[in-house]
Image 1 (spheres, each protein chain N blue to C red):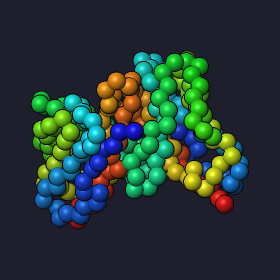
Image 2 (cartoon, rainbow over the protein chains, first blue to last red):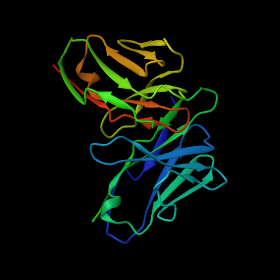
Image 3 (cartoon, each protein chain N blue to C red):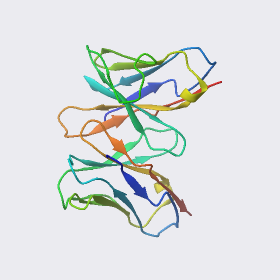
Length: 116
Length: 109
């Protein structure tokens, strides 16, 4: 199957700093990627849709100025958590659909963010 | 409302036992139902994508069924093995997925 990588897998940062998470499709091109987050005991929740060459679209309740998404190429989307606060501590995971196979999506392994 | 519910939340079975989990979802505006197997520190692995009412899919000892009219899907594992231990996620959607909270399966040798 297709492979999606994420970096870093784990990051600890201080409150007020910014953190960038990368999502790469390694063996296919992805014009669209999706970012999810998961709080403890909860389900993966869609945050935003990352579109190559255009602005991301955000789900209701997700602050676009806080979670900056850049999809600069067909294989890379980045999520930057700006001015992170402890409540942003969560598990962030990206996914990308492959073309040609209906509805199939591949996920990265996720990034555990801890804000102290 | 696009809530996807999974049950049970967790499950412990003996090696060799067969088991099944449930995923329920709103039946309106249905496109597809996905099952993923997720081991800690790894990417969720796609098991099945199902789109049609009555769909049944099988991969080795794992199979799944879909009822879009009543809004549920079952995942079955026959003869569970320790390597089947993982969290099993279901999600509905075509591009943007709406996930359940998962069923954590532990197979005891």
